[in-house]
Length: 227
Image 1 (cartoon, one colour):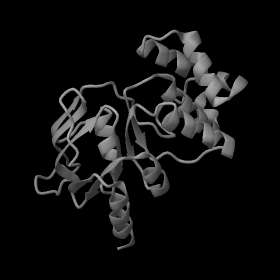
Image 2: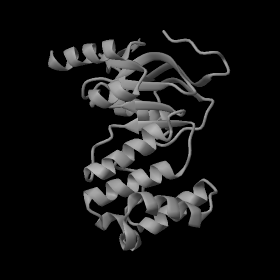
Image 3: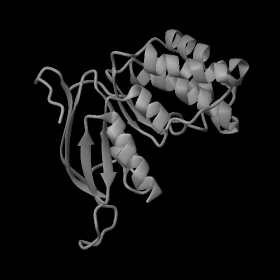
Image 4: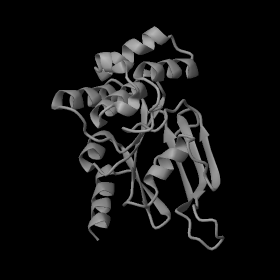
């Protein structure tokens, strides 16, 4: 297990558990999860469908409460980055940026320039987001997610969107320009995991195991998916 000095620890997760059913006898989705994340760590959360990857990311991001345990952040963290949920559909793209500027106390014009420059939506920013195509929503979601700098980015299954140029732009912004930032990424994309992650936490049957060798983790996860 990778160890960090006290100064390098950006996240401590202690005895974390989540149970959805109300019955006391219902099995937990997972329980007794313990791990730390360093300030420049890149951790993959791996698991078959239904094992709790997205739930874990939502708990870490504060969007979902754990049933037990504690999440202690020592660095700033993003909301879960994906291509949904980063905006309010009834608002226009511009109003979503304005809301974000208020929440994070940023200059609206500066933030608008960053989001619009990345999303490349032009006049469509004046439309309610609920009328966007899936590709437009994806561009806006990614632009909003990267407009604010965080110490750690939470990533929930990034999906390729747009043409090859835009996909390269997304990868450059997230994984290259922010190379010194921490990442926690839940994904089925083993090519990306192997390229950008240092460690992996595999969740299976309510338990989790940490792997410091990312390629060993990928091999085991691939075997689990095929079983």
